[in-house]
Amino acid sequence: MILNEQTMIPETKIAKEEISTWFMGLQDRICAALETADGKAKFREDLWTREKGGGGRTRVISHGTVFEKGGVNYSSVYGPTPDAILKALQLPPGEFYATGVSIVIHPQNPLVPIIHMNVRYFEMSNGAWWFGGGIDLTPHYIVEADARLFHDALKQTCEKHTQGFYPEFKKWADDYFFIPHRKETRGIGGIFFDRLDSKRGSQEMLFQFVKDVGETFAPIYTSLVSKNKDLPFTEKQKQWQLLRRGRYVEFNLVYDKGTRFGLDTDGRTESILMSLPEMASWVYNHQAAPGSAEEKTLSLLKKGIDWV
Image 1 (cartoon, helix red, strand yellow):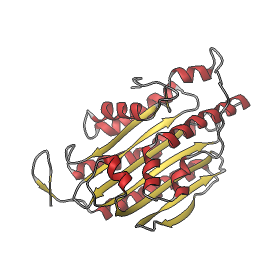
Image 2: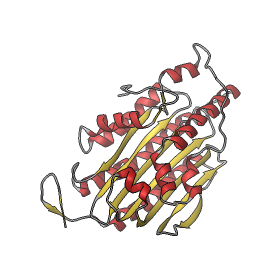
Image 3: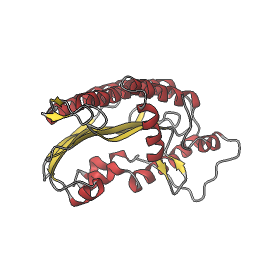
Image 4: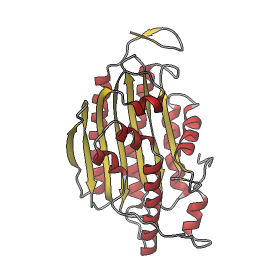
């Protein structure tokens, strides 16, 4: 039994194996939805084990009708907590257990956005536990109607649990998915949350929230795919897509905490770097033409936009 720190009422702790099993099922459901949306490509699965404890299922889709490259990864890893993680998370020494699903999808058509989702659970041998995760969207070209649709879906998911989650987690995403050296956001944000523990609600309530976030992914993204995947595009737009992918790479390699966590815990490198696109580009001092769609997109890559 554990005590809820808000109510001090005993509650039954959910077994980490139950949480992990649910994440495996989520991976299955999302892979099936994405295969249907692509209509051609299938996920290739690699099963891997971690020498110090645990492992996972990496699933990669590539060279499809819709998706150029993407991954839907499940992992469940455990063992002695590395010093780098203890320092970063300000934790006492002990054993850790971490499980979750991580997704990044890079589409063929530059008018279809990149999407990322991560839902995860972490616990320590001293009894500490928490949930984290979020969903964010990175359009190569920002379509304001699509941005509103995306944020409205996330707001509805959050408000099933508490009115305060969406504004708090939306701001968190704006701040987190920011590229300081470019002074721009990675995309239009979404929601991001971490260290949700008994101070924020019961374990059962928070697990249900994470479940609802996970189940929001497939319907909202496949609707955006269906809307945009057959739109014609130019070579200029394709080159812009490669430049925006370059920004994505910069964030993931320099700032992303999930990338760092995976590498610091001796995770599987190929699975960790699955988030990177197959092709990206960097052009020296590229400037968007005044009045262009590219310039408009850059003007919307900023924090604090109220999309809903």
